[in-house]
Length: 372
Image (cartoon, rainbow, N blue to C red):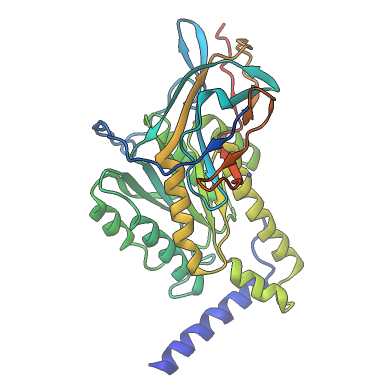
């Protein structure tokens, strides 16, 4: 058995080396004290209808602001996390400042609490890297199964795998058995294409009509080999969809191992760097996060951060001072400030020690266009 295992490992390394040799595919005034959060009572959530049986395409992108009495209203879901990835509760409304195109905005409503997650697990599964029993095949399944194990009974989850095209393996359900049954189909990859752009845009467009806290959990190399959509078109669709993306980049340790030994060509190195940057761009512009683990032991911390971010959020709405319906993209920046001094808010723990924190929120939206 030991000889078989060694032989299998050697075959995986040799296959990856062959890919690298071929140069690879082309293509984020008072102090606020962070106190432990008390679990709040959760209202019964309405059943989420199937969105993967018929693709719903509304007249306007689902990520655009909603209309209320002919007044434009923008909705923001904001998470404030410590440097350990833990949600920081108890921050008053007065400490939040919203800037739209550098102009301060007046907050209309402000809510905070905990809610179930609605997530779609989007998994790259192609012969480009996930060949049977290869290292990346094993890492992909470890990450996917590991995330499913962190879900609570009230969470909704769907599973989508993609190579040349996305395939819906299971629709949204609180029955985790359906997700595990769907994962059983990920055995042997069929094609050597990984059309990331097409898969992501198709998924977020289907998820846009869903109400509540939702996200895409993307497990991918970040490579795109043959998508119909370009990178710029994909960015615009993701920005407007209103679905945050949380990406887990694959093969970090394996790439570093080959690069350190001079076994990775310059083109392959640039391809991988571009893939990482694509994941960072998609996640930052949708209000999510990108993770690039080098060790399997990093997965639990990543899943905990995603859970903390999605379950616990500050929901803020405002009516922008710019009510022009010009179809232009408007940048949003969320800050925490001390209103008395207009300086960045200083947050401390229960022992009075300062906490480093980061604010997770989408960085903008596309205004609707006036219909003539």
